[in-house]
Image (cartoon, rainbow, N blue to C red; front, side, top):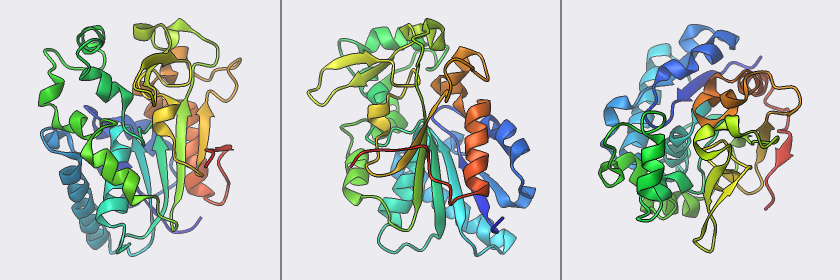
Length: 273
């Protein structure tokens, strides 16, 4: 396998521990697996976290004397952070040498969930339902700088969309869908995922992981996979295919491992242009 270092970027209100099962499966020495933590930056905008990621990678390169390409594996908001670094902050210079970005449930077009948190009609009830499961007690979205930055209507999301994708990087996205319509997939929403449609209306879809609908993950012309691959033969309980559990899901881990070891293999599907 080509010499490579892997950077792991966790999601919103998460931590590096979500990568433990993946790390156990990777055929890489520990010094080539770099897990970025930003739990202490929960009051900072995406731009600031992205700069911290930049510094983190530079320091790791210097410490390990590593000059080669890196793969970035990211979950949820972590993908917004990673892309803001490589496309906005480093987009023109392209100083960071990146082989591929492997996303897991990333809201590339901005997050419908972040938007609905702020919706005066739906927001309070959504937050009440998710308290203790996905959001902390007494959560006030207006005070959450992280969430404000990944809204569909945010300035940082607009910067990402305008910056465009880098042609020197392979992009992949691993998404989940409730292909059997099982309400236990994400019981809070009866197995569906909230989505903000282009006409600004709200709806719920089976094409999502309970938090991130496929419409949010869309990256034109890039590869993606949908888990479960075979809805009749799940490799884990149904609820472990929802957003929160995806970094630990065995199918997701197998896909990530496959692409790191064989980057020339195309993703199963391609987003339309």
